[in-house]
Amino acid sequence: MLKLYNTASRQLEPFSPENPEKVKIYTCGPTVYSSPHLGNFAAYLYWDLLLRVLKAEGMTPYRVLNLTDVGHLSSDADSGEDKLEKGAKREGKTVWEIADFYIEKFKSDFKKLDLLEPEIWARATDYIPASKSLVEKLIDNGYTYETSDGVYFDTSKFPAYADFARLDLEHLKTGARVAFSSEKRNPSDFAVWKFIQPGESHAMRWDFLGRPGYPGWHLECSAIIHETLAEPIDLHAGGIDHIPVHHTNEIAQTFGAYQKPLANFWLHCNFLKINGEKISKSLGNLVTLDDLEKKGFAPADFKLWLYQGHYRSERNFTWNDLAAARSRRRKWLNAYLRQFQQATSSTTASEPSPDFRATLLEKLDDDLNSAAAFAYLDSSLDTLTLADWRLIESLFALDLASADRDTEYTALNQRLTPLLETRNLARKTKDYATADCLRTDLEKQGITFLDKNNITYWQFL
Figure 1 (tube, rainbow, N blue to C red):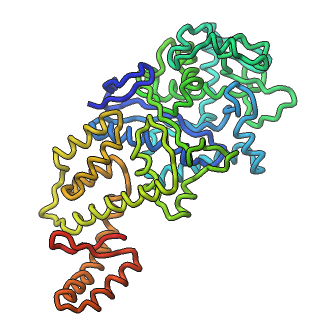
Figure 2 (figure 1 turned 180 degrees about the horizontal axis):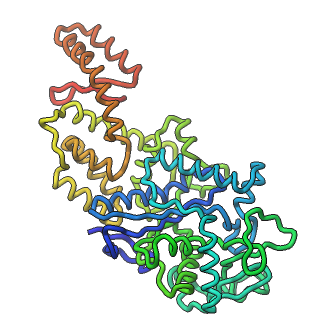
Figure 3 (figure 1 turned 135 degrees about the vertical axis):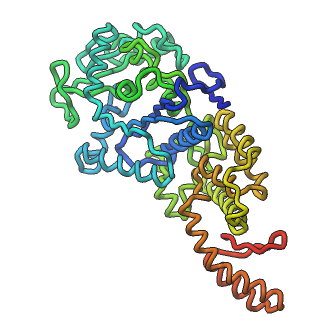
């Protein structure tokens, strides 16, 4: 049985969706104002593993992923410049052009990582009517108040506000800066709708409540979930930085509007650092998939590196560690290729070994423990069947045993088998010059021979 760490209870709990044939999942998506970096993609990789494990356990996930193209201000305190507006100024484009460009970039990288696409890509600006309706419900239910710069959720009207993140509201109130605003009743109050001030430049604007404005960042997720999935959903996932503000606010406004809990299960992944430092533009340490590929790494190398740890543990990325992960992935690929070269239609099992499947899923069912699953794979390499490898690929998508790759391997096998036979004959007749020449030529192509258990295989260097 799959067990996951539920942030709401701070405990490992059995995951039992209301309807296993449609498991309602919402995963927080990117703010589309710049190229996504490795830290951004860590969360989507973890949740991709979650989806694949659910499928392996016979469930059918139905996932919505939002694309934030408005309302995400540079400060969580409902102040600062909208990140899309900032991106537009940086690149001399309109906010719409910025959003379109970086949405396509995100989707392109998403595909490179072989991640399962969501059932719904939910662009925030497509849900403005739903956002307005949500604000109206909050107003009607008495959860808001209006200031000169927007409509705010009054967190004192929701007694359970601090529960999810275990917030110390008294301490927050005592330490609040005067700069917050004399109009703001509580430091924890947050904007559900922002008014555009006279003279303020803001290209994305909608008339509402008698003046132009735009939705607060937190609002979009509640509005999208209500429109696409309905409350309560089975599982909501995001980064740990979302716990004290973004997800806490989602819970409050959803209950305020609909008197229902937002989600039954909450999953949060930890941060990814680069060389021990927080990922930051100011530090110049943003690494993208394009950067990996320029250095000769495949997206699947990063995926394997990430899965060597746990989603709730902080990870520290270094190029040396990524190189080690690439070597591990190459070792697994060559183990697969040995089995591929031996297999025939008459000897290949159509289903993975029951024991192997049960043990592998047992590791993953323990809160997505991919590190334990990988250790088990390392100990099983020489015993795995092609069907076992198909299961591995379906769970981790490491570009080892896909149908497209098998077509390439078949063509390689047809080309290399005669060379392998020539090399073995040369060795048998002690024509070592020919055998060495063949090996040298192939090594220039990144291929070598391996003699194992009286069988000769070709494999990648």
